[in-house]
Figure 1 (cartoon, rainbow, N blue to C red):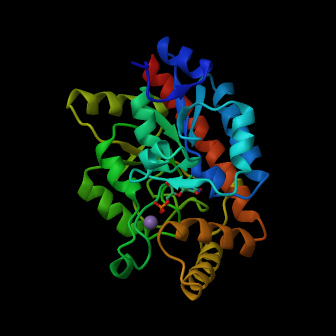
Figure 2: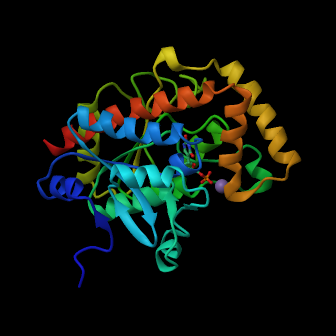
Length: 303
Ligand code: PSU
Ligand code: MN
């Protein structure tokens, strides 16, 4: 029998075998969240940030039917310019493997793969959540259910502001997922530091998050934990300005009848155009900021 149903780079395999800190990274943000070549630059910068912080990055994707935990630089570059990569969540991760396809993993699928590989900490931009108008569309990301079942710490800048953040928090509470704002009382809103809503929990350093995680483990809790880390003040876009872009993007999505999996990539692309690229700069800054915190948490947990 093969040792694993996934492929690791030597760097990731050695780190895991030695109990060293590893941080998982998703790939949908590369293929569906940002345009080439900024997406490649972002992915490589995020990996470099994690290495500088003293942990090992493991970007996760399916390439030609093989689940990879850790990609080499050429593989990241190739994925970043693949135009027809699938967007893989819990429902279709195994489909891509069975059919020999290439696909990028969402937060949900990345959590599954990270947990399979024994990686406890994962950095992303924003999680999927409850879409605005979900009372009509029923569009609720599988990321939320995955957070309820899979024991991985997800470091994010909260839920993307294109979503209904209040409803997203309600669903996370129902599912029993702890949501921790990092260093502030309010929920961040991805491109802006505050959503104007109180966060359920607050912690101010990586050691405290690791302590909370250890306490959760003693209770046999098997779900994930969401850390919502506000982006640096110098990179934020004011909430009122973002709301204008989001309203325009949502109107375009409904005019063009965009639905299902295409909604999030469509909105991100429209907001990128409407903001003259500013949303992309903020997005890159927040992923790097999350990668740094995720590395700190992984280091605390490995101690
Ligand atoms: N954050 C970003 N860009 C993205 C995503 C998150 O800055 O592209 C992706 C993540 O992979 C997340 C997914 O899991 O969008 C959510 O998609 P959906 O709403 O279809 O579940
Ligand atoms: Mn959806």
